[in-house]
Image 1: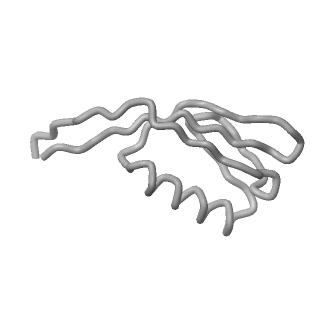
Image 2 (image 1 turned 180 degrees about the horizontal axis):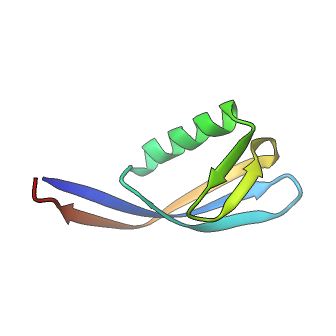
Amino acid sequence: MTSEQHTYHITFYLSDGKEVSGIITRNEDIATRLKKLQTIIENKKTIFISDLGVLMKTKHIIHVKIVEVEVKQEQSNA
């Protein structure tokens, strides 16, 4: 069975003019990742992104940009 590893460069733009950005890798396509982020931002008070080492209040996030930088095919021996 083959699965895909998607690597994204993600940037959060905050209301104080600051930006938080970094690289994350997930098994989800970009549309699924955006939908999950939107749900978290709408329903949670804080968001913790362990890959970036960041905890921020969602009310300060004004914009999110995700750019897919790599897709790797992984072969599993199941």
